[in-house]
Image (tube, rainbow, N blue to C red):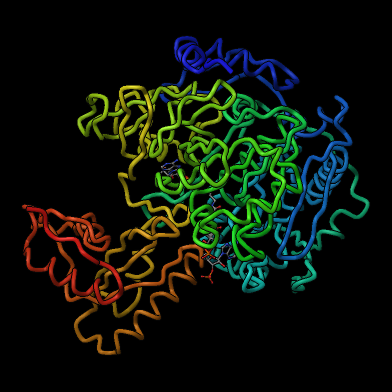
Length: 637
Ligand code: COA
Ligand code: AMP
């Protein structure tokens, strides 16, 4: 395939309106837009203003009408329950229509919010699409979050209704969701009128009379609902993501821009055709799950795979290759962590040889920085292109990639590829000036963002402006640092805020610090993301106790670990904290988290000129050494 990338990219920036109007032709519109891009509210751009569509119609009905009714829309593969199920486009459309009817019967109308707190089961996808069918706004919360996190999201989204399930299934345990949901509702001030609960055989949920309805009862005799026409600019969903404090940000996704961008991305980034099978091994609780388990593949008329399992242990490191082979997956998308887990158990790739992977073309990776070793290993054992690409919950689709559908560029390990058409990516220094190629700085996207990216934060235009648009004039700040080389390849190196990436899951160290600081014995603390061979990063806590706190340190550390698990959730993977006499600070009192991280990782560290007492760094190094960190590493000369 000839490389079209450069021409397409140039055109997308020189004529964004023309470019995206053309892309939007592949979407079915009830009414076409008045303006491709509404620039009338400075900074708050809106795509396809005046357009009317329905995202669910574009995902399901139109494909059934066009003759894809019998094609598999969704394959549910659940090694943890030994279940496999295939739903055709017609079956999925019918189920979604009935569940939308059930939601409507419970009073849900366009614009209402519906929180979805569910494991990876087909009903979760049905619930999302049913909301889209009605023009209701879903907000999916990842099952690994604790009740308090769920409560924060409920309070912000103020849902009319919550859809949940009796349990999720982790390889080592059944996680009962209903008690967590009940606690969250108890804590929240915006209690929903109804909860619809899927009863799974692995655990039976206790239902609260009146408020809780079983899924089966909810859909009994529910009249199927038609697709409600929705404004292109109306929200399709809210997805909360970690911000720089414990309070998550409600990223809003619109209907029109999202449908146009994702459809375009399926063809041009992933290079998949209608009828092919696409599998994103993620969770519907994350943006990857929204965009590429649910919406992207269905918008494009592909078969999507919903996998309830892990890369290893369900039952072995061949799980991904088994699924890819059985369902004739053409394109697979996962996080580097999953590959590292597989590599650790099957370094020679012996399991790969057991499966027929003749349909499998390309592997895409995202969610965290991919170390070149893992990328090269995967390329070697799979003998296929392995493409790292960079994106965020906020953008909803890739900012930089190697676009398989536009003729692949040579892969550079360590780089997430070149800017995707539509994204004007630049690198600026802290003062906002451009830096030369190869120089690290702040990665920003010159406005307007392309369609599909967040138009704002839920009920918080000012927060959107403050968090993303105020730092660099005319640009969206990604909060990632990195560089662009002289061939336009983007290298994403680290975050510029307190976000860490644990097994591809985005967490705020500030949020963890808030939980630790609330412990009665804690005077102050610092949490940093320490390098981890499997998960990329894991949170590591340094804790200073209050004078007079005289209980054993081990007991307090155990309590802190328990508190983080209880308040944020097991997904935080907070397992290590050390008690120290004091924290390294600048003379003005700022905790030197960057230095702590370098010491923990065993990297060379500069002794900051502003530190109040350099001797403290040796103390920190000793303490971290006792819990297995700070191996090697020394102050730089
Ligand atoms: N509901 C409840 N608990 C959950 C959960 C869910 N949906 N998902 C994860 N958890 C729990 C796990 O059981 C685990 O609990 P534990 O501390 O009791 O063991 C904890 O949260 C951490 O889970 P996880 O991040 O999955 O780590 P792990 O050590 O169990 O597994 C990997 C390691 C590498 C196999 C796993 O992290 C993985 O599959 N990573 C890929 C990540 C990914 O796809 N990210 C999507 C971004 S694109
Ligand atoms: P999330 O919003 O959970 O998708 O996390 C987004 C963050 O993950 C980004 O801001 C980056 O810090 C990081 N990230 C995602 N993809 C990549 C990648 N390919 N390379 C480096 N970092 C990445």
